[in-house]
Image (cartoon, rainbow, N blue to C red; front, side, top):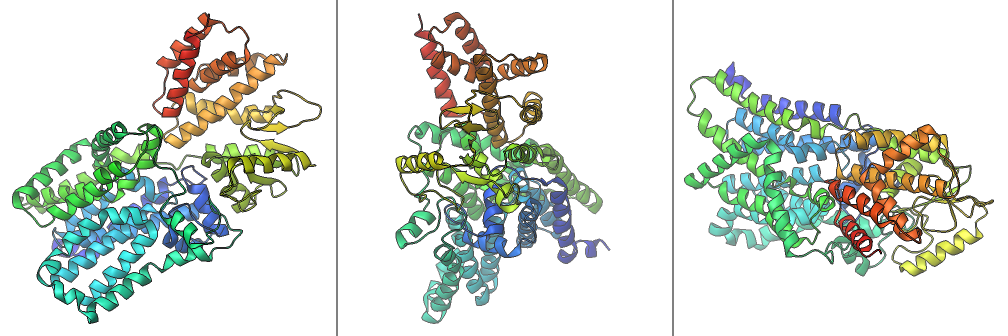
Length: 611
């Protein structure tokens, strides 16, 4: 009976079913931040994902999503994730017993980054699936010389590049070591015309999804609009349209990212199992096992290699962008852990004890990461933006900008048909198809077109960020050229929308960097509202005064207070501002960006220079 329970086919069921069930239970059921809103728009309405395009994922999601709801997109990532775990399990059975392979596959499924990516609509679980498929096919090819496995590996490699080519290229040296026995001893057979031609053909077919970038509708969704020429095609897939090399970033930032990656690696499985994984690596080095080269190269590719290539400033925002990139690398410590488990359990004579150890590994990883991965209760982002849209007057025009605002608002308006009467526009002519100028127009050209558009508009115009004047502030948005002119208006609807966000911020109920950044923006906007309202002669009631004091107790509230006093008060009170500055410096949050750090230092210099 025990032998039958260890059969690979039987253990494949829990490897797939248990993680998928937990993914469904922990995934968000409303729109989140990251790129969720953009992918939902592109997948349900048509268009291009952001550079480098992710054409394979885009084609799949545009044909597989059964609903416009965010849950359908999240389920797609969970589906790819569980398939990745199944292939990973089959791969591990080449070296470990089925029981250890199953335990390791599920441990990887509940590792922090993989779990977080498996419950939101993203490209990373598909990237893991294609990498493991490549490894499995190459493993079987080198072992049995099954040429169909070689041709399939070439095809899947092309597909992997069509999904996320940077991650796959960084993992390519690892795959090369898997195929090294054939390359070293039988390279001539690989380059024979009868073998080379079908291999190149299969690889080329795998790259065909990239043709969809040139075939997308001219009026489709997409951050930078349609791709209309070979030059634009190359700009898109090489990410030249993004400036990843920040001017302020240097080698210090790269070294800091390398230092950050070490504890980040231990967070994936929890510290004890992370240490156990290092012990497994030490055993592997001692034994000179053939898994050593591919696992180390795969680990270093998306950690050391990526950190040295990218030019992110080292701050919480950069970390949040970097965090999903090593998703393939984090599978390697799981393999090292499996190697240790294989050595330890091989000396045990009690199968029940072996089973208990493997179950404990799975349970420990799951419990270690549950709090940080569980997003089933996250509703506040969607609730806030729905209330914002509902508060706009009929047939209003709303300008938004930035991913944090444009993606969720675009999803609700275009994909979920919230407030179809309004016109939602992007200030920078990005993402949405109803652009006032081409996406690649200069900033001055875009602003000139906006000013002309607003001047001629006969419908009420609103901006979320105060980018035009004169304005009437409402907290969550600002009205342009309101007649009669009013500086600020406080409405019960706006305050009701603020209260849950303020409570989450003060109650430490936020978990992700993008949530902190959005909450920071919201609290800053409402602080401006209350200050402008009182400056115009308005009086706050008792509840509003309590709310305003709570806002001033936050980091974004203090930043806005200092900015207002320095920019608008002809005689700023140096003693008062020095006290606020000292409190603000002590209150710097973990999510603060380098840009805000520089802004805070600027305030400090200006306050110091006051008479």
